[in-house]
Amino acid sequence: MRIVSFTEARNGLKSVLDHVVNDADYAIITRRDAVVMSMDHYNSLMETVHSG
Image 1 (cartoon, rainbow, N blue to C red):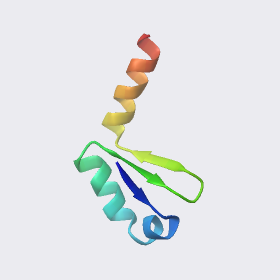
Image 2: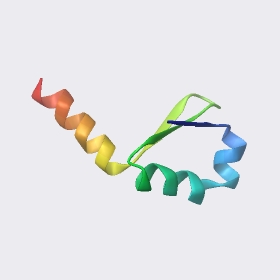
Image 3: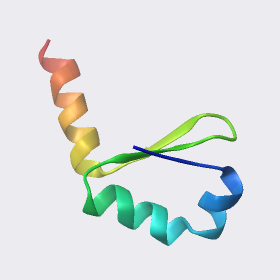
Image 4: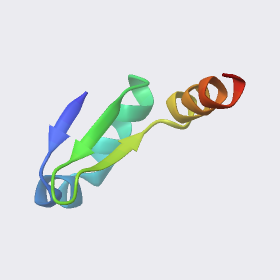
């Protein structure tokens, strides 16, 4: 998990996206507590939610 400010996320969006995709991780953007995650991570999470 990586926590970044809105400004850092905006200025380094490519880096944030590369991090979550390459590491199958997620990032929290602290402006409004948004979460960015890789599609693989999201699909896995949704599969778990819908199978339970």
